[in-house]
Length: 348
Image (cartoon, rainbow, N blue to C red; front, side, top):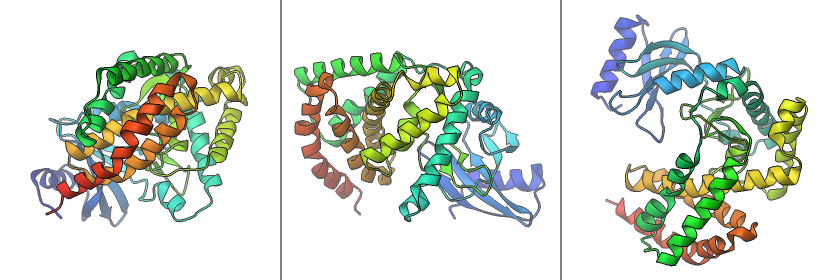
């Protein structure tokens, strides 16, 4: 294992400050930020240390969101110890089986998705008061996210120079998507509710992680994050069936749920698809940035599916015909060459 000053700090914190007793420590995971996670094994079981260097990451949002989600009855990791000035948390270990693992291994998706949808319904229905404590997923945030795609995916990754007409078309697309997003009912939005952030646990599955960036925003955002996941895809008919299952959970709660479910399946699917398009346009930029700026190679392989979602969704809406043509003729044809160029740039 790499020995660095942060790891030495963690070991001293566990042994001296927390008097944890004999333990071993190994890397559990690293996410798309500067946070790292270590699994600590003791005779009494395992725990997770979150390492968030305070000059790069603030763990206060994590602690706030953990408390709000726990209050909704959702299974989030319990906080066992915290050292905020040094950016360290000791957490309950939710295991090492993300939802993606059994899905990729061929497990029946039905029960796994039903559990994920039930937990999401809990967040939205029981989290109404908690959502008022969150910052808004407002027009400024939505626009800032959409602008990642031209900069990092088009310019940096595909090496395209956009024409003035293309820039104007993207501005019109951005305005349309922001208006549609803000028209949805506002709920507690995890923002990364997908198969890598839902852990299969023995009790109260799934465990929910990576929630520190939650905002109050569009009702269908988290649902599209899990059902049009950037790491695994399903046929449209299956996706629509799960959307209907989720709406039924909302409607079963009476007027409060009905306000979040839209007037019909068709209206809700429109919300679902259009906020999904906003998300996937953003993610194209984020994945390209994670590679070119942060050196995280694995996200390159997730670009084709993300772009496929953008193409498919744009094709559904007459309002987006110019954007759809742009994706088909200007973006998609260059992706394979960009991938090869990026891969070669990392070769020894």
